[in-house]
Image (cartoon, rainbow, N blue to C red; front, side):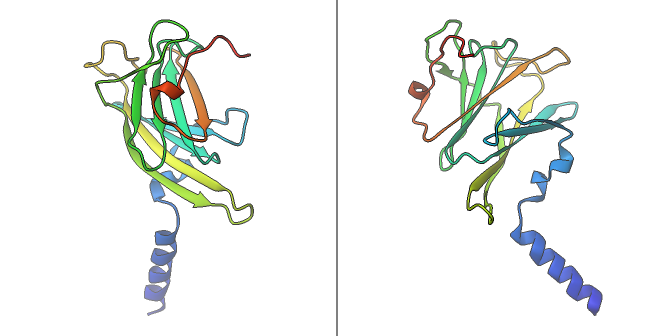
Length: 171
């Protein structure tokens, strides 16, 4: 009988915590982006990569990948609670708005919010999945052993591509 009580107690405790897919032990690679606002972890298999993002910023969260250091030509993914995942493909020049991607191959696996009791801050946890190669997208990046740059942004609110503008080097 005691074993059953312990099992039930453990089940109730797990049900009140974050989804088990959000356990950092499943993501062997990570980057802190030199700020508490954004931490990125990832793992991959032969078909896809999962990006686990933790952010203490309570607004939109954006992630980009590109084969060079700037935003021109980047794939840009924007998440804001209560909105669908938005996906953009960068244009080839500076000071141009990115275009919505017709192919929606990034997938939001899970997004949860957590309130940190000690500080009262809200932390967003989410997992984005992307195939390693995308055959139906002409300008999308294959994720291989070749280097790709990860870019990120956070902001208070997001209303569409008008909120994202390319700019020159910011240092």
